[in-house]
Each structure stands twice: as structure tokens, then as C-alpha cells.
Length: 182
Image (cartoon, helix red, strand yellow):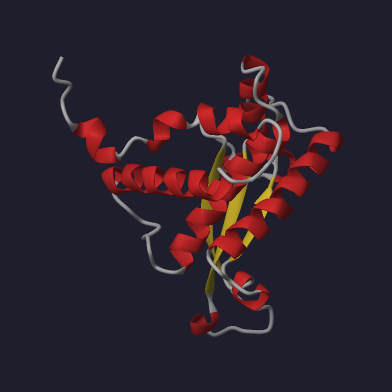
């Protein structure tokens, strides 16, 4: 198995700050109270905390859905969806090394905001977790558009560069399927 490059302790602190900010931005956007926010149960983990099967090459993060159950319950009706946001440190770090205009904090803020929007959409039944590849691509476009809408007014150094980095994802999905007329 390939050895991947994990975040260091300083980078973990930056990512934790991005998680806190993303949670606030997404909960404010969806007008969710603190008690509602706890409804979609999830956790954010970095590479050092991931199991081998949760590590992928390519995407910056992935969401894995697990079934959870309260500790003192054996009833099947007590199960709930638990989402794990698996940050792929190695892919994020590689992109940061190649793209000097992007910094860890605004990049992490975008990635985590994006993944939290997915979780909210799954939890509110706005999107099925088990979707076809075509529907997943359309959902990615929708979530990138929503992520941009949430973050575009945030005054944060380096964030405009991250929004620019994701420009291609904001092209409507239907436009990509239309043959080029040139």
C-alpha cells in the first residue's frame, strides 16, 4: 500500500478552524438551529484517522454513509445514517503544492462546506445517497453552485482564488452534455 502524506499538527488546526466556520456558514444558510444541525450526524476525519478502504486517490474528500445505532438500543428502528467526511490529505496537499495561489484554510473551507451541503441535502431527502452516475454528476454541479453562493460573500484572503479554481464546476450540467457547435 502506498504511503500517503498526512497533514501535520499545524495543518490539522487550520482544518479544524475551517470545519467550525463551514458548519456555521452551512447552518446559517439552511437556517438550521443548533438542535437541527445535530440531526444530520456526521464527522470529519483526516487521512491519519481513516481506514484503508476510506482512502482514495483523486477527490479531495468523500462522504461515506454508515448505519449508526444508539449504544443501548438493539432495535433496528433506532438506526440512523451516520456520514463520515473523509478528507484526503495527500490529494489536498498535492494540489496546494501545484497551485501556489491556493492556501490551505480557504481551500479546506470550500471542500468542507461542499461536503456539508451534500450531507444536509441527503438528510433533508433533497438528494438520494444512492444515485446513478449521471445524477451524481448533476448533484455535484448543484452543490458546487450552492457552495459558491454561500462562500462568495465571505471576506477571506485567498478565497477568491479557490472560487476561481472551481469555476468549471459551476457550468450547468446540461451545458456540458450539449455538443460543441464549433
